[in-house]
Image (cartoon, rainbow, N blue to C red; front, side):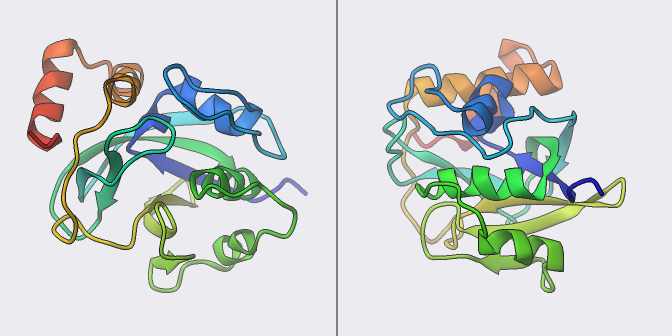
Length: 195
């Protein structure tokens, strides 16, 4: 029986396939400060697609990987937010989420059972930190589309400017998945990056 799958929806640096590869196969992203161990299953996504989320992107806090602000998604503030969805296994999703939460992937991650059981309210808080709030943003081909963000909303925290290397990775991701040119990318980030 094949392992259960989901669509992992990224609105941040993982829109860039090279960046996501570090979470699946291990390594250090270009311009990043941290080395990642990778997922238990290192298979690359079987499919991906450009999507648009209904909420808003914002930058807050300080990234240990990049320095500068971290991209977060507020599902409750009207957007839209361009994003990229990857079809991966539930186990891979849990492993990506673990590394985003600065934990090591491990057997028996409770997030796997939560995902397989379904998010009754469309949201689950695994903890108080960065990327520990799981949100179901839709369904495609009968599979849940999931992303993660912080428990705080757009208006609850001061906004911070992302580091140039981090923003460059987000820009690459938008070009890859949406085919946007520099002018369109500049216009989008000009509307969301704090001055």
